[in-house]
Image 1 (cartoon, rainbow, N blue to C red):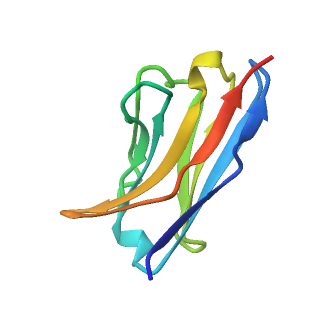
Image 2: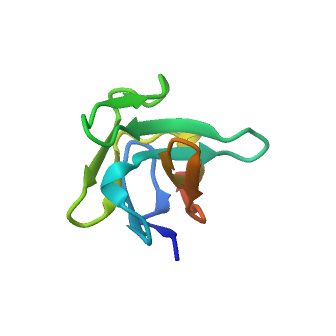
Image 3: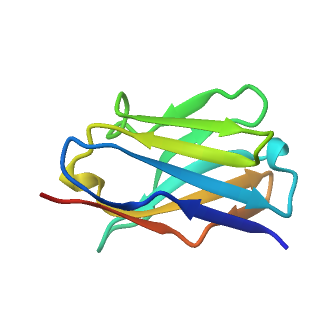
Length: 116
């Protein structure tokens, strides 16, 4: 059974940091590109960051470049999103995504709220 379970969300003040984790099981984690998406209220889901399976090259949404870092640990079947210098507009539900060709899996999402 495929599972993607996100951890680490919560409430943080502007300028603060959070680290999201996504634990994967039920598929060959190392052969999938891993991504974080987010969806704010009233907005469409958007790609935040992606890390490619073999090269580990990364790409980021312009809005998070220089503040967020995606990484993966294939030994632990886990992908991370380190979020620094958080802003009000980073408030959203964050989703973990695994993709390999036409196969795609999603986590259930985790809330991140940036508020003073």
